[in-house]
Length: 82
Image (cartoon, rainbow, N blue to C red; front, side, top):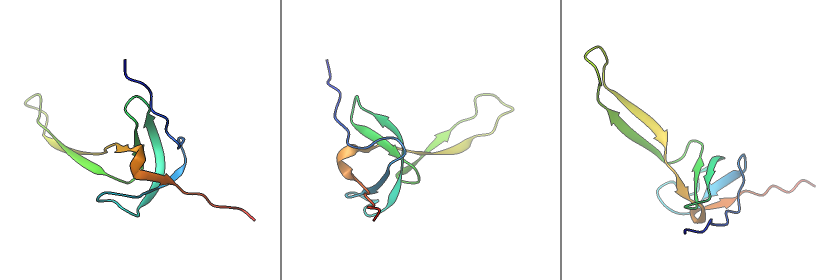
């Protein structure tokens, strides 16, 4: 049975991407999947899905969505209040 991974961020936290194509970009955590250790960050790592029409009346479309990142590729933004 797969173990849940410890993720050091919570939903709503501000994080910075530390590796990969979106390095040094910041965003807010929207979802956390502890089963595979991935998180979804708002405005980062967009992917596209081409959807074919299912009936004759529909038209095809390209859907854009945020793909998950591994939690080890982000760090928590800490802002100290003095």
